[in-house]
Image 1: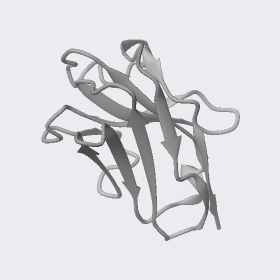
Image 2 (image 1 turned 30 degrees about the horizontal axis):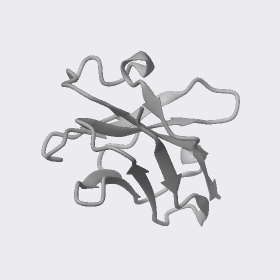
Image 3 (image 1 turned 60 degrees about the vertical axis):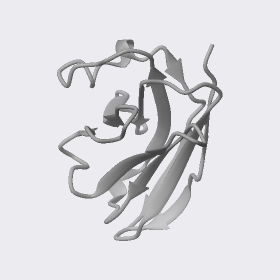
Image 4 (image 1 turned 180 degrees about the horizontal axis):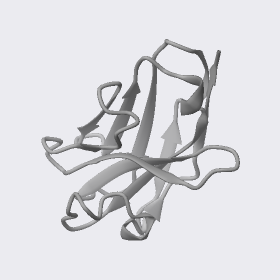
Length: 124
């Protein structure tokens, strides 16, 4: 069983930057992030493989968010820049073993391990 613990949520002004962290109890092949805004479905944000060299991003965050990993710490990071009010959501760290195609990256069902979520609020 893999446990994921997110940290770094908070309140930030629109246009600002913020960074989330997710530490796993066990190193996994894929780590990523989903988010869920009030009244909306949970949606894919990004993921990356163990080497961190093949990230996948949702169109809504491409060019603004960056995922990275420090495998010595079993930790993934989500650097969020140029934040918008519509980025306000609970952000969930996810992980899985084994490969994952780009096409399946956005499917919640492909990730058996989830963190508890951390709130990010972007004020306008």
